[in-house]
Image (tube, rainbow, N blue to C red; front, side):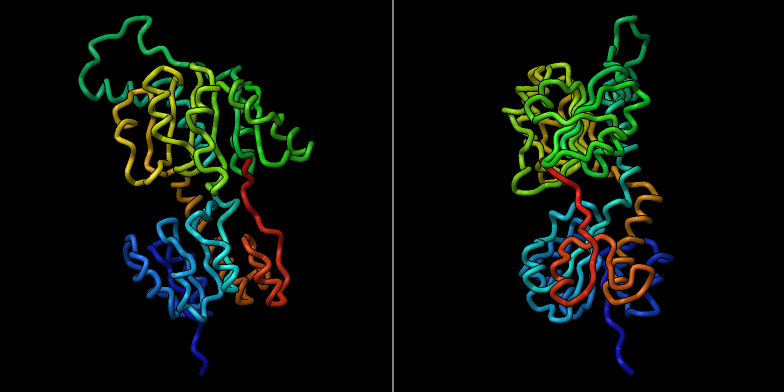
Length: 345
């Protein structure tokens, strides 16, 4: 009897979804979530035919060097800056992400962060919990209204578009900058117009970052860019740490060059720049924008679908739905879809 292919899952997830793999694979799922040192990660991968990993697992040439059987690395995330895509492609290993599974959840969370930062909700809650509420004056705790303002979006992929569609209810003018302009029909659906990056920075009352982290987008928002923004503006980063120069952002917030920020991601996370922790005009959350049951279950299901499909099983048999390097499948003589990726400027 031929042994089943082996799948390793780097963290506990949803057993009922993972069970879809059982008829076809030997499944090994980690019982707890930890950070694996590179050598241990390589050892975990070595005898696998497929792996499902998260953002904590950085998979590149060294990690797959001894994995002669490995055919796919399925990432539990839209962003895949933890994967060395070039190295995986060179090794003939497919990679996939979970594009589309978390868009609406992340867009909802983005608006929670925007509104919270604009109306100083984090600062007010800390003040109340500290027992300082003995009454408030009429002009205390003035925040910024959202309605009628200009929303700017840097990176107009699926998540950026979902954020834009929600702006309709607030009567906002939506502008965006992207590496490539959206088709006119999609611009109309989002009620958004393309501007160059400089104009985006100058005009935005609220600026949302929704682009992937790449060498080109690292520090896309630094001291130079922050200096072009309105001092009354609010910046929200729900994309990846490293897109913003957190030190420069702390300077701008402390010096009153920017009104507020809302950050779900950070450079070097889980370590957070201590200067950001000291500021009242920044709303912080621990990289949880996709943390809803619907989104996380959808992400798991998509990773499972990609593994099943690569091995010829399930509704997408032979056509993994969110493959990132379709040239690997082409080299193997398989049909494949166009890769689904967030765009970046």
